[in-house]
Image 1 (cartoon, rainbow, N blue to C red):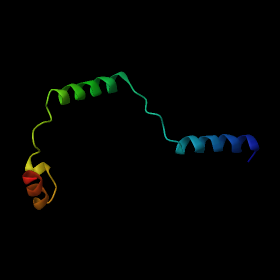
Image 2 (tube, rainbow, N blue to C red; image 1 turned 30 degrees about the vertical axis):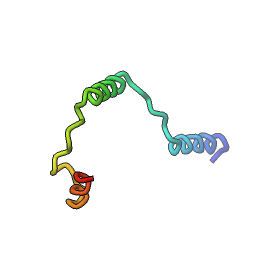
Image 3 (cartoon, helix red, strand yellow; image 1 turned 180 degrees about the horizontal axis):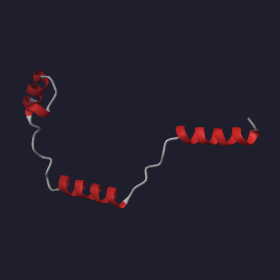
Image 4 (cartoon, one colour; image 1 turned 180 degrees about the vertical axis):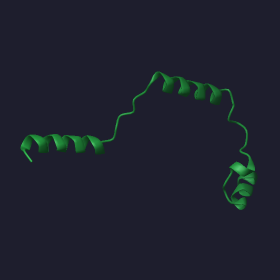
Length: 66
């Protein structure tokens, strides 16, 4: 393997393991804005349904009385 190929391979491997910067698209911005608007309007204020709460029963009971 030549030095040029080794350098190219090294760069490719380094890029593969390097954390990628998030790329924000217009759709992501719109989705985040919609989530924040719903959250601020109180859409997530309801308690979770029992079947959605996977904590053991005793932890749920303590959370309700605490």
